[in-house]
Image (tube, rainbow, N blue to C red; front, side):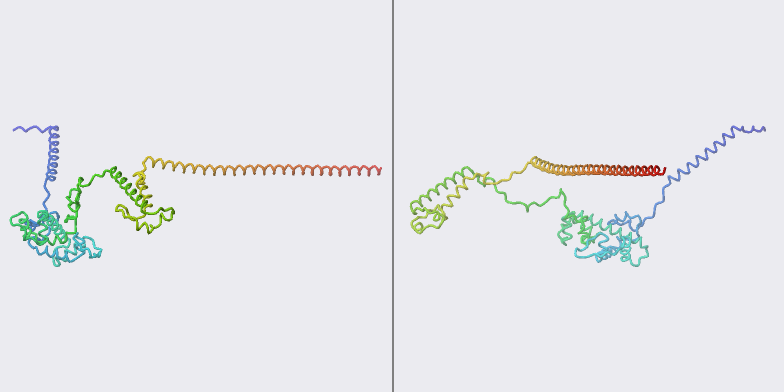
Length: 408
């Protein structure tokens, strides 16, 4: 049997390249499979699977507690009792605090406060305190959520009947009755939650209103007077009637006094009390008042003749342009006065400066004059000194000549 020829070097290289490609493809497949593999699911507590009420908020907690709140409603009742008796817990977890009560600060953080509440609720629980705290906080959050949900289902009427202890007035078979029956079976803490949350505007919106809230405006209603019941006054007719009545009264009054009373020539009697004869003889006129006549005659025409614009001193409201003009004028006047004061001070300063310069020039001239006089005096002294020196030299020279001449 003949042997097959050995493979060529080219075929060996092709086989090696093929093996390398296969190994690379295998590595890529392994990595992609590892990435696409789903992560293992975390364990979930089985006790919360049958919770239908108040456990919606518990689902938000990442760590499920092993406390069955539905199977043990006494835990919830005890939790609410602890919160109701402690002002610190009320304040820390957002519940109502009485107005006259003063909450003293304990200085604890939210975590420490939650641990304290969990320890008070479960004093002998083997669970870690952190897990108990999370379970208690989640339960409080669930109770608030369930209270809001049931309050919305009851509506305003049902909620009012329940909190006023008039649940017996709820009609059987109505929507409110169905909600109330479900609440009695699954959420018997509704009234207690209302007492704890009634002060918060988040859960009690009776004191909150907006632009769309209807208002009871019946208290603002007043009896509107009909326009036709109010008479239309004719001012011209009223003035004419007043003038005519007034003139008639003046004529009647003057005639009565002219015929029944003696003539009065003294001014003092005019403004004085009426005489005895006038009181006896004068007959009373129904249209006249018992006050003195002259003051009335003088004052009434003055009042009648005044026109409405003259009688009423109405202050005209200034126009904005007039205000701006007045403001501008006042500003300009102040500016002019300021410039005057500034110019006056500048002029005074210049006068002082010029006077000072003149004084300096005068002093300089005086000094130069005195220096010149001093130089002249010194020059005279030098001349005199030179003359004296010249005279001495001349005198000494003549003495020597005479002495020499006498010697020879």
